[in-house]
Length: 370
Image 1 (tube, helix red, strand yellow):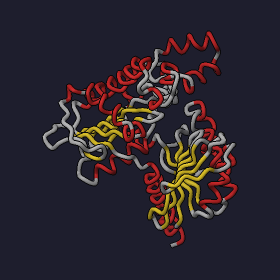
Image 2: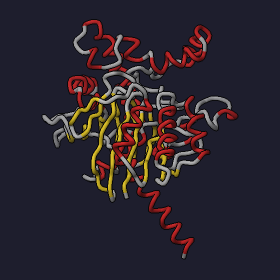
Image 3: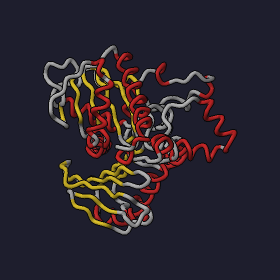
Image 4: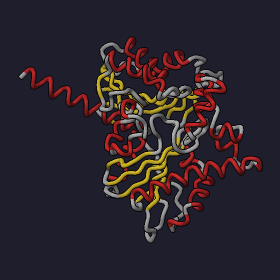
């Protein structure tokens, strides 16, 4: 069984290939839509022609050839959360879900439609970012708005595959049945509170806009401020502002943390970013009644050690004690809270969910034919 996993953004496509559930290779197409588009695979960089998203997909189809199954990360589709075979109904819901996830849903929809035309025999499987958040209680999911609107307008939670991967990795050393904070810091940022393998709460809400300030997203904001923007510039412009012109980009003039480092004028911006991270860590720390394990993941956590140290300094009330490691367990044995920096493997989770679903389909077919 040849399985390909696909994780799509507006300017990147992450992919991996597995055979009989064993990893073969993985890669990333980056800077799609620019003359500098390239593929990073096995530490090798190859510049490719990908001035459009379709050109990037054409290159990828040639690379993966003829898969038996393709597993896609789907950020949001109302009414769907368990991994499933892609259907027309699901495709319609992904399209509708663009309102909730405009930076992801349009691109994954294009990818699925394109790949279904190319790989007609393959099984096409959707795996949802919201699935792991099903354990959040109704009181933590609901907003204080009239009940007739709460069926769809509620906390969904995102970065679900990241959380699943972290829990899976902690299981390997018996640290999963604990009070855990998963802090994902990348272009999108979130904090998720987990207790005994079940998500209790998460900082992203109805959309991936809520919670921590991000590269170009606003994070938590007074809804009245949004209404003010709508009255001033209209709905479409407000949507663009909140998703692509806010966060670090709005306050510091650059969406990449590396570009802000060392600038005197960026000091206040970085402090505001730190505040938004530490505030939510503290909130969920107290909601859990403490924490046994804290896990940092994402590009900022894994690569920007200088910024991670600033977070730790702000968390001094937790009495964290560190060793000299930059990855894995980074606290000493005497530290009451274990802190890890882990690479969340979303591709592995996509593969696992696909294999589980395919085995279930096979069992059901055997029962029907028995």
